[in-house]
Length: 127
Image (cartoon, rainbow, N blue to C red; front, side, top):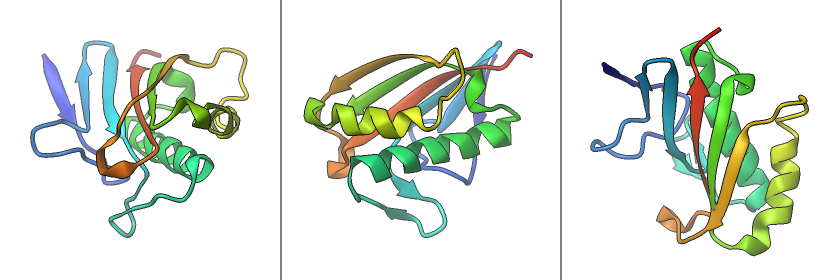
């Protein structure tokens, strides 16, 4: 049985998309963009800032789920241009100093609202 999950700490894509779905021993977090939940504003302040904000928002969702970044098993990252990869990867690395970071796919494509990054995640819900 799938269960919808929402946190007020991050972007909710639209009424037709769940922010996250818990199914069995995994949670699937929908694509997150650079959104400030405190102000309700979309923030486009360079790829490093957007990356940190998106990962921080995902951390907020995870906290509300009772999980941490170490529970993420897979990230799907979309960049507006692969030219942003190096700077994004340096900001991303700040969040994953542990020895087994998540598996990851990174591609380039147009992103809603002219944002530079969107990240979705698969999270293990088992201890």
